[in-house]
Length: 201
Image 1 (cartoon, rainbow, N blue to C red):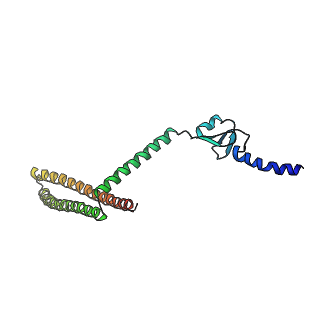
Image 2: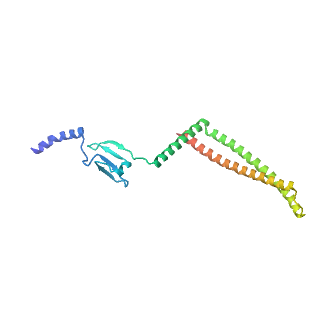
């Protein structure tokens, strides 16, 4: 008799489970993960856990909502920096695609600008060599006066100072142009790689 009653009630219980659900947990309606990664359940969230985030559930342990972890000032600043970086990359990508239609275009512009810089470097080196010769000539004159124990004329000393200053400026300019050339090569290499990636996408 009892067995027969149990068999008759089983389908009704199954229907009840499908329609109304099963109360899985009696402990409460919150779920959270602590700093050590352990999962906890309860009818309230500890004060120190609120900033870490938690889940809210109904009496049948169905998720109602999730309270995200509060972000610190540092997290917000990092997120803003990431967003700004992504926005800047997107802007550069738009310019890159609008400026060049193929890899050959990029290489053409790169080679043209490199040729211009190489020409500037060569001109600077030639001017520097010319000034070095003039400086060496005036140095020889100054030494000849020293050997004769005669005062070096002002025109010679002033010429040496002027040439030294001009050579220093040219050397500084040459170093700056070489640095610009290296940066240009690096920038175009990055642009070429980025262009290929964008086109592949």
